[in-house]
Image 1 (cartoon, rainbow, N blue to C red):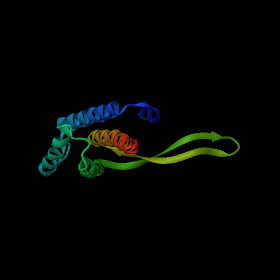
Image 2: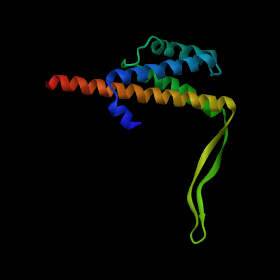
Image 3: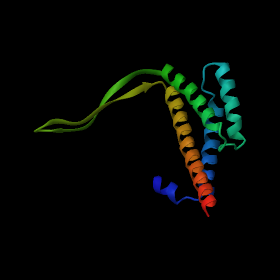
Image 4: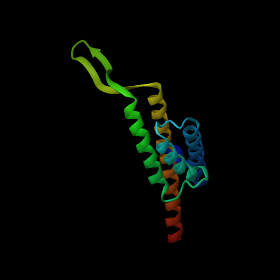
Length: 144
């Protein structure tokens, strides 16, 4: 992924960020997964900037963080427990070799919300890559 970002033009990076914004907005609008009308209205207001294509504005990251907080709170409500999972193998001489990690056990709604949260994270990464490239190009132009 990093090589693709390094080889992409600024136009391609902005295109990818816009595409991810469009997909995230569509997914959020489709479900409006929150449990309160207040949260739905808040997310709707936040999404209006993204729908208009204003993904490079200074206030967008704050908007995305606010939506993430709402989704994270809802995901917590939809998580039953955590399950311990072993990732590794059994060595006859040394015993179990690997790591144990915990995965959340959620409702279907919780899994859907987690997927939306991952989409927002992908949007943030694409947006930040475009902003970094834009800043770099501005710096290069100043020096020339």
